[in-house]
Amino acid sequence: MPERRRFRRVQKRYPVEFRSGDRICAGFTHNLSPTGLFVCSVYLPKPGTPLSLRMKLRAGKKILLGVKVVRSYKAPSQLVRFVPSGFCVRVEHAPEEYFQMVASLLRVAA
Image 1: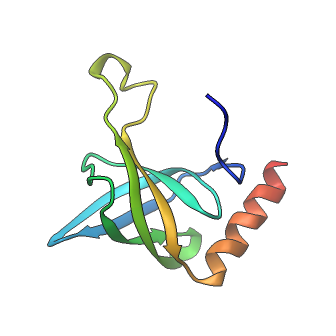
Image 2: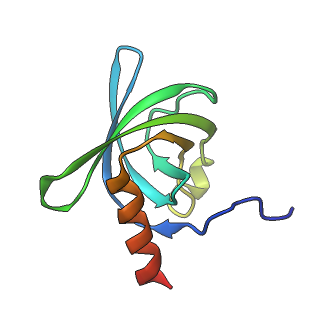
């Protein structure tokens, strides 16, 4: 299957909280890019679900993102130690600070 991503991903773990309906759930990022993230979480929202996602950066700084779930994946129990369960989101609304942070992470990873 050909690669369809427009941007490279960088693996970075940041705690996140997201709101889905009346639920407030927690997780952490597995990888991120300027256009999307993979979030590891026990709660897996359905594809198409819009979410407000709050990412906690170093030094207590938080960034609020508007995202939409693209796909969810639950790893089989025998692979849970090796393959993350979670969901992919497309970034729909983000402050400029998010894009600057991702750009600096990508420069460091290169």
